[in-house]
Amino acid sequence: MIHRGKILTIVFALALFAPAVFAQKDVAPDAIKTTILDAQGLKDLVKNGDKPLLINFWATWCGPCRTEFPDLVRIDKDYRGEGLDFVIVSIDNVSLADTAVSDFLKSYDAEMPSYLLDAEERREITGALRGIAPRFTGGFPSTMLFNRSGRLVYLKNGVINDGILRIQIDKVLKK
Image 1 (cartoon, helix red, strand yellow):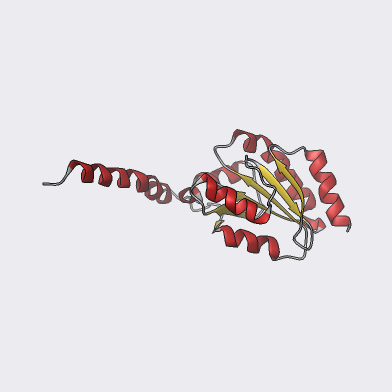
Image 2 (tube, helix red, strand yellow):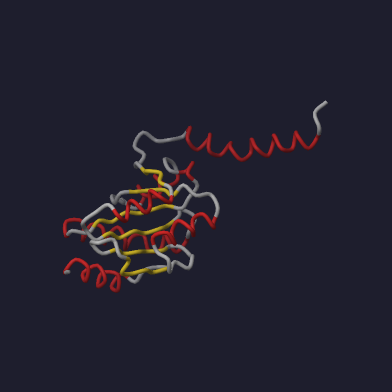
């Protein structure tokens, strides 16, 4: 006879993994490609480049992220040919990369490279972000601007002010 505790453990484990299985089953053929990266991959992303880099951390469940996203899409379109690299990094569950994250990006006509941070717990996410921005205090959305040498020159936790962010971008592009 199976112990009731073991049954509950099995049921709990199945409940944890079921959303990932079902989410991947419904991947649309036109899903926007989102690359999964870990904390080291995030550090490498900041180091690899000779252009200023703008990174926005966001999630599909984040109301303020949704509020600022149209401005970010316009910034991407306005600066894409001006020498700015711009990527977005979702902090959603990895199982949502090709479903909810892709649907969100399609709904805003987002074209910037998309990543998803492979970190399940809030402290893992915070640790990964502090690995590239030690002053990161938490909260999303979060926007970081790095100069050509990979040094953090601007950090905004919360919804961006389009005008202020553009001034910061223009500064790093002129140097």
